[in-house]
Length: 110
Image: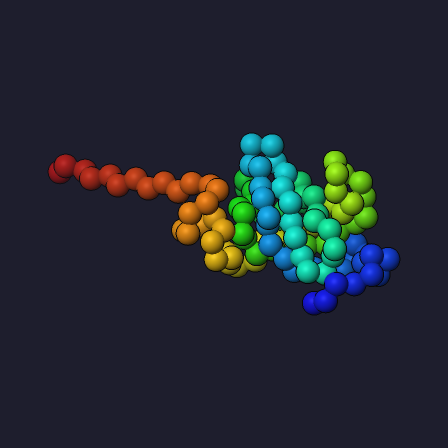
């Protein structure tokens, strides 16, 4: 979707983009979309998901925004829907980058 005039974007609009950075310990991050000229501030409370709500850098998301001054950002995410486990190449996930993964193997002697 091409960049639109700032006055054309409303909270009812649904935008596609990805997570530029996410600070799980603080519960906020930054989203980017080609629709807006500026980055979007996002809080974990806007994530539409069950349980612990967090995003990872590079994760594809769909979201709606409102015009607001939040820290140095001019846009704030109102609702965020994580897309189906998509990662951008080179960002987070199994390609390395922010975040972690863990595994545990348990063997029982019988």
